[in-house]
Image (cartoon, rainbow, N blue to C red; front, side, top):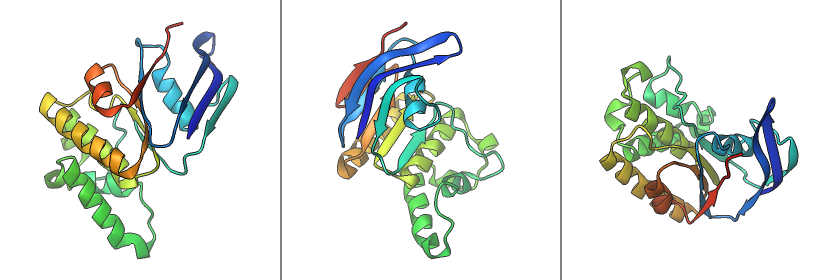
Length: 198
């Protein structure tokens, strides 16, 4: 599904990744771990196509990617429901199916009662859950998760982890997870890749 072959990347003079190689098979769930600044988010951005490697080759065979950024990145002028709907097709014939996807996603993350609120009315944890709902509605065969539970309390974190694990296993979703929490890695990932600090 995903291969990084001797990939290097630098921001100007700051080398972040050097000669990084690993692969993820279809359906594998991999946690990227390492100290702050070692390039974990950079790897996600490379996989998402937001950046290009300076050296090496990255191959991604995913047909549809969902990316949950560390910052929720919600549109402030749209309600929670509209934010989730925004990532789906606007074809009229798909309207009913999309409405169902949005409802199911909001129920899954516990935001059904907040569907008509705007981002400014949400707590940090609710914004995070809205971002997760958007990814679930969008779906895909590869999920990129950047510290997806950082703003959540322990109970909500545990509930969402259990839900996502079940979702990923049922759908044979490939997952690349960035986290500082070993508990998240243990729960969601089937293997761990430790990034070195340069």
